[in-house]
Amino acid sequence: MVRFSAILLLAACGEEPREEDAPPTTAWEALPHTACDAPSDSTAFTEIGDGGDWGAQRIISSEDLPTTAWGVVVADLNGDDHEDIYLPHFGPGELFLGDGRGGLARVDLVPSEEFGATMSAVAVDVDGDGDLDIVESGYATVRPLYNDGTGTMVLGEPLVNAPDRMFLASSWADADGDGDLDVYLPSFPAEEPDGRDFGPGIADILLRNDGGGVFVDISELLPESNDGHTFGGGFLDLEGDGVPELVSCNDHGAEVRANQVWVWDGERYTDHPDEALKLALDCMGLAAGDLNGDRYLDVAASGWGNLRLAESDGSGGWFSAGAARTLWPEDTDRQRVAWGMEAADIDNDGDLDLAVRYGEWELYTAMEGPSSHNPADQPDALFLQQPDGTFTDEAAALGVADTGIGRGLAVADLNEDGFPDLITRRIHARGLVHLSACTDQSWLSVRLTQPGPNPDAIGAQVTVRAGDSAWHHQVRAGGTSFASSSPPAVHVGLGGEDVVDALEITWPDGETTVLEGIPARQRIRVRR
Image (tube, rainbow, N blue to C red; front, top):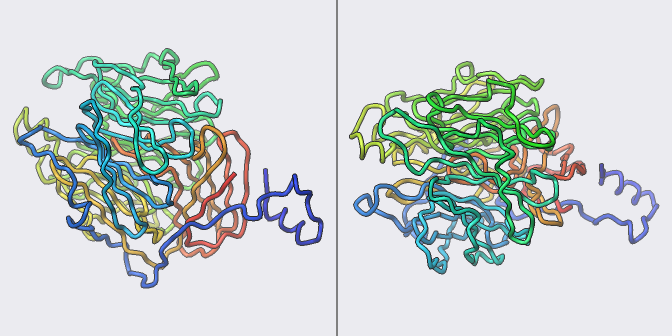
């Protein structure tokens, strides 16, 4: 454990460390942010509109294709410390560079020689060179787009080529402890029978990263329950012990295979014994976070007809908590098919909230016709956690109850005012950016950087302590929402606290750093 406050105290007392042992003069550095000079009474959102480059997105009409790409990626893709947006497409994707104030400028990407039916994407440093790459997935293939650090992408060799399945997500973590990032690929059968007489699913794929762009299939280490219709999921460290579990989000969960949780036993993955984690629904997306402050991850799932929540009891068990926390649609007639879902402290009051993307399943409508359980205009939800732990859908009041055909969702602070914004994807329409108003609530945003093949410290545990409260977060690359990814960073709402008493970082290799006395309301980077 490194306590930088103690090192600085020794230096102040006149005991100067030797040059070869001297720590950095600054353990963390401030990043650009926008001061909240005129706090609002609420975190109401403003949609940035259809002008400029963002409004000129490439749109595929329903006359040309029955559906379009579903995902959205938000991350700093050109190394300027501002968040950018990448939209996967059927064909070459679109990149929009952010200016840190909510502005977005389109960058023309060199078209791929191949036509790719890519539906989703995640930002992750595949080659460990210090900049975030894009990994697209869709029908039959998962392919990396290698970033040169400026946002210029070069198409790499596919990680897999499997025409019998669809890939709607990828999740990355150092599963084998060798320092680089391995990848879990949730898989969905490319063909399914008509009606509700579903057959067996198809096995997900686990790839070990051997470095140098070499990935080895080690799917035989997954258990026999690896046969779901898996839309998403990934590496989630449920117990915060540094060894992530694999959590799957399975469609047709009530009929075929419910969501699964697999635990590494030192030799292979085995089924988690807690049945409460194995949510049975038509799962589309996952959200994960410490909703109750007990340091364990709670897992929420979105699906057709319901939302589910497995909450930790603080002692290594989980229980169904959706009903007790009133996590259900406000408009049960119209909010029927839930897709992207993320946990974030939207209002910075110190409690995690849940954003949920709703939308008509347009392919079902094309096959079966319109129906009351799959309506065309399904408003999104924004469940704000109340002081008693219950949730209230405030999407309409805050201006984010979009009724388009919703799919992917990312949460990120595009204008750097400390309040999370919502970036969403729609079918046959342009994606949306809703910028949140800032209030007088406090916050801290943390990015981690370390040497080696995992520069963004994916898998790190971050605990923030201020006053009598503590918040626990993890750095992830994929694994939540639907077909989308948010930045590999940690955002913490601090309520009324103005100073972080302690920022505790457990790096992926288990080493710990503690920083003390950090002023709140800023974005920082901690360099290892």
